[in-house]
Image (cartoon, rainbow, N blue to C red; front, side):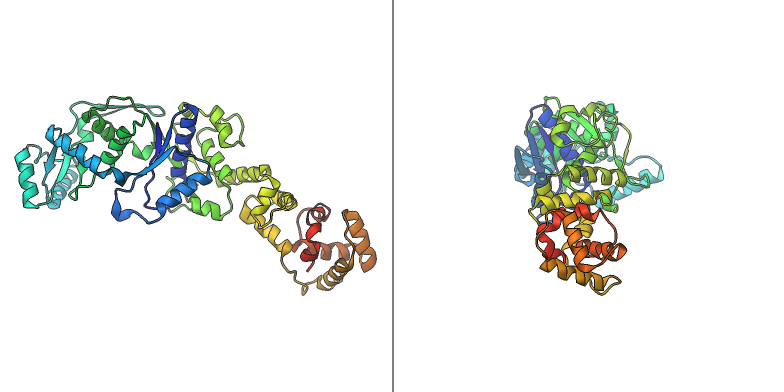
Length: 437
């Protein structure tokens, strides 16, 4: 079983999507189930509707799940497991105040050492726990630190050893009784029998804690890990929410299509392994090898994404492409593809296609000639061939050379430059009266 575990606390970004795609892809390769877990236990940060938005985005990228649940549904299970650890003396109650903890942090800072929990509450007994509950004073539950190194066998990074002091005695239940991220995550991975966890390397510090939690709970099934290198922006810094290109919402607004975004994200760190540059997700399932992904950070290249997007637009079914501009006509899809020499996104194509069908401006330099040609088109019979159409209009108008071709192009396309008019005409002839108005 593999899983994707997003949090409904903000917009989904390319890092999230990359993790979702790779988990789904590896699940498909290994013929395993793929689970989506909405990690909504941080109630104060949850944004209403984000969980639905996440599921819609996954569907948009054809990342199909076998099951889905909200982590908050398991609150009682998380609390039960934490209480079990208390009874087994593998965890302990901690009544340290915020002031005490802050003083410890300041002391560590002054001594230039990493902050570690002081251990002052580690010897509190079960009776102390009962007394604390009756008093109403706030307390948390901490897990005792491990007694030996925690080893993470990472598919990408190799074996990583973490010393007990680095894991520390960390909080597993907050003062309000809700589980912390690491505890809820580890418990749910255990309960769902997640066998392979693929996520970003920003989770590297969480992994030993989660392994420790599963160890003390007695979970013996093997779990493999793979931590993906970070994605860098154009300045060579870690991509963040401040980078527009990290937002899926922004990429869609700019006119990038799901297949192209997916294609590009699978190429990151895999360019030397991929048998070809342009591919679909089903094709990637055949060749992708997670063990061969680069260990180095991958730099986001907007020009590369634009190139890939253009290629996917070229591959798109003509009729399907036309629907992006409000049509259901293969000829309009073919028309859009004529402009892919100078456009790379749907947004850029819109600036080429939509003016063709908008009312034309007859007040410009060629306005008078455009009006004459438009009137002739309205009275002309239908012509299948451009040459026949051109000959007819040229003869009736008496215009020649630039005086004919310039106004004709403006009338048919709304622009001074672009693909050959002879290539455009056969694709818009069915709309010629609308176009020439």
